[in-house]
Length: 191
Image 1 (cartoon, rainbow, N blue to C red):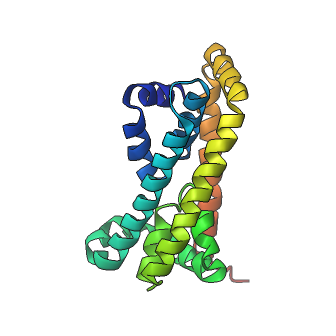
Image 2: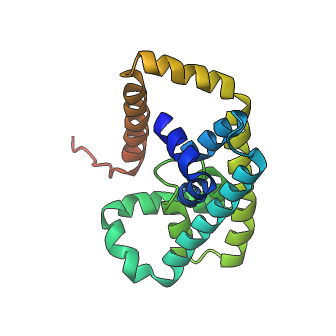
């Protein structure tokens, strides 16, 4: 988090735009904390993050729709995850666009699988617009109002530098386990 804060204070709104294009939760949260500290403007930071996040998902949808063959090699190992995201999309419809914003690991796969499954581009743009606003406001405003706590945690992490990697490893490991478990082919045991 400290590295993110340092790069955001150096590169500012350009970094917010760049990393929000990829859907980074951490950058939106860091921009909110910097806004709390008076180093950025919260309205500008969240507006840039919303526009960039919206554009990033539109770009992924476009790639999946019109350049399917070009991106296919990159997703050969993730066929089951694409199938799972397609099932999520079919089960939850437009709600999947909102959900995917908050789920690390399928953020990029859902827009691509929606485009491959011939989901209407105009509907995707419409729902993605509101999903981007909700995503950035929830993460940004939550972080802004919790900034004092986040700053105190950052101070604690300086005293115990092994904690952030341990927490990050645990979170990523847990997410990987559940995504991998949900997408692994079940083998029937013979009696």
